[in-house]
Length: 601
Ligand SMILES: Cc1cc2nc3c(=O)[nH]c(=O)nc-3n(C[C@H](O)[C@H](O)[C@H](O)COP(=O)(O)OP(=O)(O)OC[C@H]3O[C@@H](n4cnc5c(N)ncnc54)[C@H](O)[C@@H]3O)c2cc1C
Image (cartoon, rainbow, N blue to C red; front, side, top):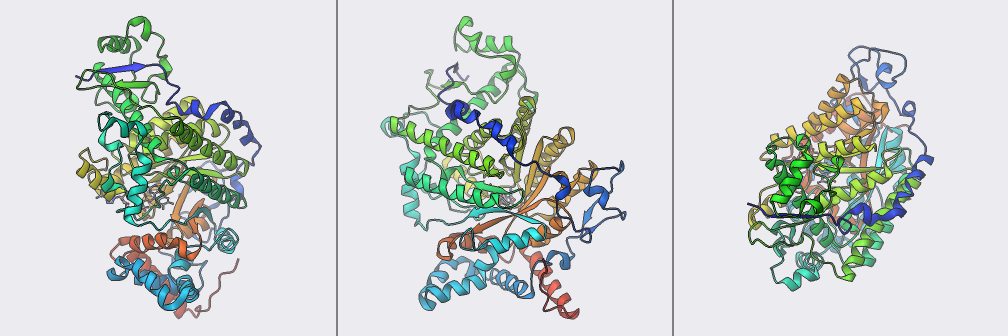
C-alpha cells in the first residue's frame, strides 16, 4: 500500500503565494476597461442561411422570446472567399497543390535553403511572399501586418497576433539545451536517487521537443535574458492587439522561463491529485467522476492518521471543508515502496529559485499589460509533462485577473484522457470562487510525440485511444462549458479547431440553448491561411471568430512555414476540401464574369 505524508507547509509550491500580494492589487484595474457591446458586432445576414427568415432575432437578444435557429452554409464559396481577389485564390490553390507532393513537403527545408542559394535572398523572399509566406504569414512586423488585419476585420474576422520567429536549431543543439535546462542541480547530485517520476524527467532522446509536432511552435531555454526578450515580444504583440476591437494575444509558458520548474511543479500537482484519489478510494469513492469525490473530513483525518502521516492534533487544522477536492496545494511526500518519506519537490538552489520567481514575474507583467490594453491573454497548452503546471499557473492568473471579465484564457487539450476532469474541475472552481472561466478548446498538437515518449520511457499513454474518442471528448468538454454558459454567463470558450463537424456541433448547441453569437461567450479560432471557408462565413454571420495571425521576417519563420506545409499535406481531409472549394469559387467567378473581382471594404 502507498505510504503518504501530507505536510501543510504549502507556500513553497503554491503559485498564488509566488505571485504575491502585488499581483492581487491589480485586479481592480480591469474594471476600467471597456465592456463588450454585444450589439456592435459585425453582421452580414446575407451569409447566414436561416431556416425561418428572421435572423435578426438570433443576433440581438432584445425583444423576442422565441429565437430562431441559425445555420451557416459552409459550401457557399462566394461568401467564404469574399475577402479574396482572384490572384489570392490562385495562390491558395498553388500552395495547397504543392503540399500534395510528398517530396516537396518532406524536403521543404532543404529546398528552401537551396532556393535561397540559387535565387539569392531578394528573389527568394519574393517567391516566398508569392506562395507559402503570403498564404500563411501576415507580414514582417506589427506595421506591415496592419492592412491584412484590417481587411479580415472588415469581413468579420479578428486576429490573435502570434510572432512566429523560431530558432533554427539542429536536433543536437535542441537536445543539449533541453538537458541543460530541465535537470536541476539537486537532480544532478542525486545520481538517479531522487525519486522523480520518469515522465517528469528530461530524456535526451526526446530532448528535441519539435519532433513529431506540426501544429505548434517550440521554445528552448537559453538564459534569462532570452526569456526577457520573449516577454518583450509578447508585450509588443499585446500592444498591437490592443489596437483592434476585442483583441486576443497568445503566449507560451515555455518561452518565459526554465522548463525544469514546469516539470517539477507538474509532478507535484499530479502526485497531489493521485493522493486525493487514494484518499477517495479509502472512502469508497474511487471510480467516481472527479467532481463527485467529495471527501468527508473526519474520515479523511482518520485515513491520514492510519497512513502514519501525523497525530490527530497535527492534522486537525490542515483542511477546511471547502478546500477539499483535487485542487489543494499542500506539500506532499510520498514513498510507495521504500517506506521512507521523500519530498515531492527537490530543493532549488538560490539561482534556480530566482529563475522560477522571474518566470512568474514575467507572467505577471504580461497579464497586467493584457489588462491595461484591453486584450485577452490566451495561454497555449503544451506537452503533458509541462501542462499540469502551465494550466495551474494560468488558473492562478485567472483567479486574480478574471474577477471583472475573462482576461485570461486557459487551453484544454481534448486528446487527453483526463481532459473532461480538467475542464470540469476548473469550471467548478471558477463557479465557487466567482471568477470568469475562459477556455480555449483544442484537440492537441503533440499526439505522436506524446505517444512515442510514453511507450519508450514506459508510462501510460496520456492520449485517448483513437480519433473518435478524441472527438467525443472534445464534444463532451464543449457541452459542459456551454451548459455552464447557459446557467451562468461567466464562462467563455474559444472553439479552436479546423474541424467543420465540431463547428457545426457548436452552432447546433448554441441553437438549442438560444445562445446568441453576439453575446461573445463562444468564440471560434483557426490559423491564418487555413479553413477560410469556416472562418469567414462565421465572421460574416456575426460570430466572434479569430485567426491566429503569425508574423515575422521571411528567413525567421521558415520553421513555421515548414510545419504548415506538413499540416496541409494533400492526403489530409481538410486540405482536400479546401482545394475543392477554391476550385469551385474560381469556376464560379470565371463563368459569372467576376474574374477581376476585388473585395470592397
Ligand atoms: C486557433 C488554434 C489554436 C491552437 N492552440 C493549440 C494549443 O495551445 N495547444 C495545442 O496542443 N494545440 C493547439 N492547436 C492545434 C490543435 O490542437 C490541433 O492540433 C489542430 O487544430 C488539429 O485539430 P482540429 O480540431 O483542427 O482538426 P482534426 O483534424 O479534426 O483533428 C486532428 C487532431 O485530432 C487528434 N487525433 C488525431 N488522430 C488521433 C488518434 N488516433 N487518437 C487520438 N487523437 C487523435 C489530434 O489532436 C490531432 O491533432 C491550436 C489550433 C488552432 C486552430
